[in-house]
Length: 39
Length: 360
Image 1 (cartoon, each protein chain N blue to C red):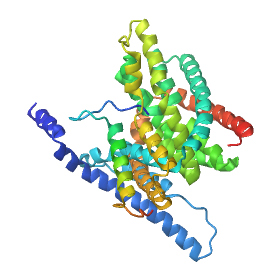
Image 2: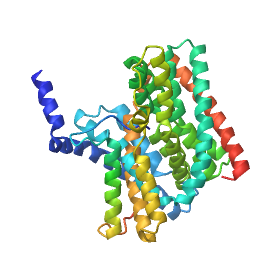
Image 3: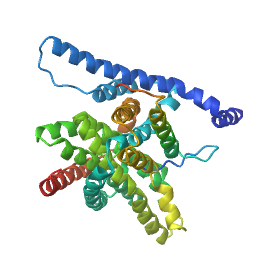
Image 4: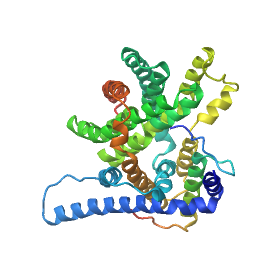
């Protein structure tokens, strides 16, 4: 799966946005804002 | 003209864009939740009534509901932008899935997978090229089909299309063939895996090696078992990481023939084509391996990954349109089917060999 050439005003690609969101979620879990996410 | 300018303005307004995502995202969420509810309801009913019934994962229900809605109804345009985010959720899910692998696991399993991926890519490129020539397909169409089946499906075809200056028609032929085959593999791979009693690990490696599109490879793995899904993603990620090298090779070949633009800076080309979410996957795995998260937090990350995949699987069903696929023509599809069956057999042999040597 290659990186999509789609970028936005800030110049970030879809891949980088996905990484940013995932890392932000991981940080929220780490600091305890997101607790015990159930499935 | 005025409409097109208005649309462009709308496209460049981030707030309008984000609001436009809501209907499609809501549809993905409703399908995903319905799938989860069906799985739990069937399990609850069969348990309560002491009925022996195989567990049908939510993955299958999400894909089936999506397929029914997408093929029997005309989904209004207002949903499209949100539905297209399924690929974004796939990447978010893969990065978060890094939490379920310690770096040592990635080193061992990733190393074996990478070795198998090299053989698979070489074999697939040779096989599809030979088949394409035998069926008299156009050279660039052969290349696109070969890249799509060897590396990573639709995105690889899109990446290669620009690099080798292929026609739109050839690209849509190849994409249609790869998507149709992805849909078929979702149904056949788990059945074959169970029939020949593959272990979770061996099946996961096989799905990651042989199913072309990342979303379908993830789903085909998850349909077998949770562990198989995890391993399929790791193997597929190794395959994805090599896309730049394959596309670069073809770009240089066509540039030498004077039928594509010359590649200037090769390192920059490789970096552009490299899937960046692989770095996120490794970063989360390193953080977990270093003890940055406790057991409860790791479980939360794994569950967040599952939620992201839930949206992905709903999108896979919705965007698979059989009527559109049927319109794309028989010859490339025949090459695709033949090639994929042979690749599935080849990779199954590879996995059996690796299982024998390393005990997957």
